[in-house]
Image 1 (spheres, one colour):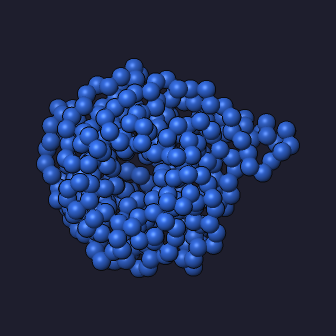
Image 2 (cartoon, rainbow, N blue to C red):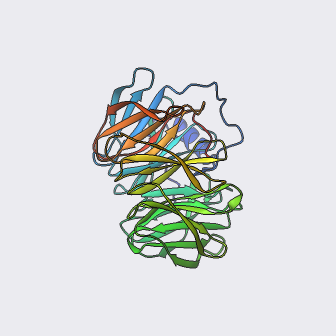
Length: 344
């Protein structure tokens, strides 16, 4: 059981006790926004970028678009998420085997959760009952029973090669895991922690996104040039949406209708209509390796990391044009700011 949350700057025992009890009251989510979503009039001021190749985080002042600080956080920080009270950011260090805690507004490190092994991608089920850590290098998925930050390992499941991204059904009964180097999709029953089925996909599946109403799974086929549409209930391919080489990860616009997919090799970002399952546009002339994306709460501006260019870009969504690119650390991956557009 992982109950040790170690502050980085507090030694007083009373303060330590208060911090631990406070954090244990949190329940954490991966993709599902809380009902208390910020107003579209709110403006984020600090962007947080994970430099996976430098074990650090770049803090960017969004109004001036300048890096104001670089902070070491641990080996291979890849993905991140917020606690549902929107007060703490969780940064998963895949090679550091821990999760670092950060204040999402100030960028201050506040502690860490140790002994979360190989957390390449992490996710909480929509009901906050289950926590999943995909062991990208260990070829396994760890499922924890979760009560806030109190995590008890329920089961480790060996799967195919390179478990990558996660999606859930809205009822929290099933988790879907892409297996990059096995070119497969696995479905896991969360209540029993058993594998329901495994089906083949296109070459090197990565990002996976559930469309509204739990109708279809969209899978970024990084080894090809398309998004594969899967009817997960019947385990069959519905169609392929051709986007660009290296289709990789998703970020919904927040209107319950459109989702963006980054095409790493083509160095483009495509917009997909989730109702018609058609591509409706492309953002082109981008630096190499677009990857993770985040969108401001007004839905007008997208920030995107460029894995192969050591940059993070700012895109004007109405015109679908790159405004600027900001140098950051090596192999930037996750990007975050608060407040942000809804993940739906």
